[in-house]
Image 1 (cartoon, chains in turn brown, green):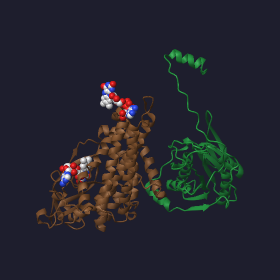
Image 2 (cartoon, rainbow over the protein chains, first blue to last red):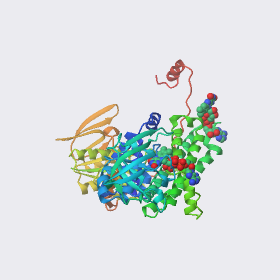
Image 3 (cartoon, rainbow over the protein chains, first blue to last red):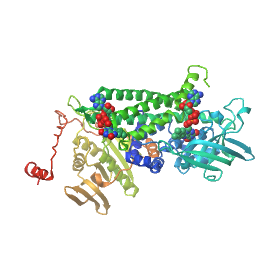
Length: 387
Length: 249
Ligand SMILES: Cc1cc2nc3c(=O)[nH]c(=O)nc-3n(C[C@H](O)[C@H](O)[C@H](O)COP(=O)(O)OP(=O)(O)OC[C@H]3O[C@@H](n4cnc5c(N)ncnc54)[C@H](O)[C@@H]3O)c2cc1C
Ligand SMILES: Cc1cc2nc3c(=O)[nH]c(=O)nc-3n(C[C@H](O)[C@H](O)[C@H](O)COP(=O)(O)OP(=O)(O)OC[C@H]3O[C@@H](n4cnc5c(N)ncnc54)[C@H](O)[C@@H]3O)c2cc1C
């Protein structure tokens, strides 16, 4: 993505590619088998400054645009790695950056930039509300200088490897609000002080090695100073951050799609059965050409969404379309690679089956395909909302 | 002491090089380019000597097309202080490069010049030697060890079958070998800092050098494909073949 945009982008691309060479397929396979967190990889990304790319220079980051962050994540995924263990450190701070007070930014951003403070966790989804975020049941009730928080989040990724969490909770009951999206507020929660007391984290075993959890809040007392922005406006703040998340994850999908097309094309050139390379058969080469074209097209949409974001003009639609098209392209490429590798696709050593499992996630999270269709139908086509 | 480090933009070592269909050269369109790996080792050596206090300023030089600035920028992101770009499109031969470097050395007056032992594109292994001859400076080639001392520098050279230690006077031209060090890669903050470091531009004409090639390339072809091997049924057959056919034992 953003090929030949400028020297800095190219330097970042080769810097990240170089870093990834120290974390080859064996590294990821081993973690996958052990369901372990890629600590060494995350530490390397942190030390080399990549996770602080979006934090402004005044707070110790690199102050880069979203497009540069897209290049970082695409490169990691194209190399065969996975940024899912750490990518939230890049964008979760966006809510704080855009809506936090100067004091909050001074307090947290420099630590996040140098890696001493990990902000990896984003608590929105709940077991009983799912995609229907306005029905979240976690509540925050003001008591003097504190908010008392009770409830449960699910699929809170990386909570075990995070010091802070951006948390969405209801501060006014839904029935008392003019709009369902009112009455929710965002908090920055320091989990370290409360772990095992008012915060319990339970690991969820998943199909891929993606560290994710269920988090329980039991009379968690959060200082009122940790409220981000205005009380009741939290949903809007979260949505802004979600556009960045979707565009960045779309970039990971582009990286994955390229990984599959690169690997499968190389295999199809080398592997000979029936006395010729399998890639000479149209049954193999046509789907690869199709996967390549779909990837190129999706990439254009991701670049467009990222550029609009950097100009402050992105809408949910572009971010959603980018994420949808990129996730579909990577899924098609994944399946095509599975087919191209024949039986060997199933052997862990080739990394295809691992990446195939990983690629599937992005048709569901962070937002599922149906909800993107619904968004585009109502916002871009003027169709009545279906729910 | 100022160090001058020469860096070349070459096809990335991960890329499979393809010969152009008209056999006039190798395909460079849409091919990923990078700093010559031996030059990375040269930059790293200069940085380590600066970190140790032996070098005060590192200047990286590249001669080539506009995009060679990216290669200079890579050196700056690793930790060099400033760059010099001699802009030239088209073929360049070692002698012309050595002459341009000589002009730059006379201007910059470094105490040490680092080059890679060869560039992985042409594999010429000539520029540093020619530069040292033109300058009348000592040379330490294929260096896998560099130690400054009161008398100059102790250089460990990688030679056939072993290592050779030589003591040379300074200033000198060094060409560095693979085992000298493992080059660092640039971190994001250093990539950002490199954007602000200066790169001066100049041309072969400014340096008083005529870069016109003296050699004509007739044809570039792929090496012949290797013939398939043979399978042997037993160790005895293998030994017999090695002795009677290959005549290696
Ligand atoms: C590995 C992983 C990591 C995650 N990390 C995080 C995280 O860090 N933080 C966080 O807050 N969340 C996280 N999530 C949650 C993720 O955002 C949700 O899983 C996702 O939004 C879907 O919600 P749900 O699972 O409750 O599905 P549901 O809402 O139950 O939906 C199930 C299916 O029904 C469809 N559906 C629902 N409503 C409609 C409708 N009106 N019309 C048509 N179809 C509909 C959906 O599209 C989906 O296909 C993660 C999920 C996973 C799997
Ligand atoms: C879990 C598992 C269990 C297995 N169990 C057994 C078992 O018990 N016993 C056993 O004998 N085998 C077994 N197999 C092997 C299985 O039958 C082969 O993997 C399968 O037949 C494909 O062969 P291949 O993997 O060598 O793929 P290849 O032959 O290399 O084919 C690779 C791809 O190229 C395509 N292709 C090849 N030639 C052409 C052509 N001419 N035109 C178009 N497309 C072409 C193929 O369709 C495939 O998509 C197993 C495989 C797996 C994964």
